[in-house]
Image (cartoon, rainbow, N blue to C red):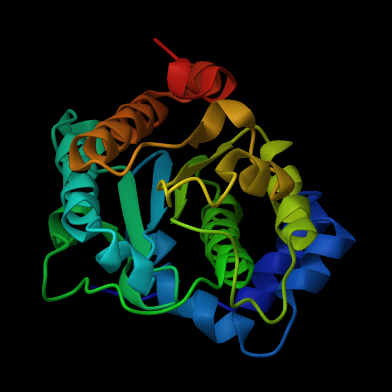
Length: 267
């Protein structure tokens, strides 16, 4: 598979010129080492995607140790695989226009943006959560990757829409650069374009974390926040809701606008 070797900084400058990125967001994305992390997620090049329009579906599963201790690991594996299966079940013309990327909360890339037939399932070999919770730092990396990939298609003249899911089972504990307001500015810049959906899922930690407050402070709209209980069935149900949203978002521009406005409650 051909990997993207585009200049990440140039993509962000292009987004700034287009009015997609504010000066504050550009500054947040212009820090040392961030470009290399984003580059690792870009995957297949725009020129190697034969589609008249593209949908980017991006997931960031929590791989902190508390996920394993809470017994949520298998439900997350199943949920991810459910989303991929749902996208694969769309009609071929839609399926061929979807690229998927999975970056864990601690920065490991399971796969960069790839065609659906090249996406591996999550299993016990590639997902064993045992790390920390750098929620803000890694959300900046994740959204930077979405922005860069989207801009790559924009610069190639290809319409692009994105659907992103951030996951955590606790508040930020290990970020060293970004704050909630850093993420919020990026989210606000993306949402004003009306081509992005940014969703979040907070796995119950026994009531210690007010996930809706955490995600709101990051700029995520309330209708795109899920807070399933920690039972496997409820977690899988939440992934089903996201999968339906991702499928609807990939259908056409009209469906995307309706889905983005309605959140998870879109019929």
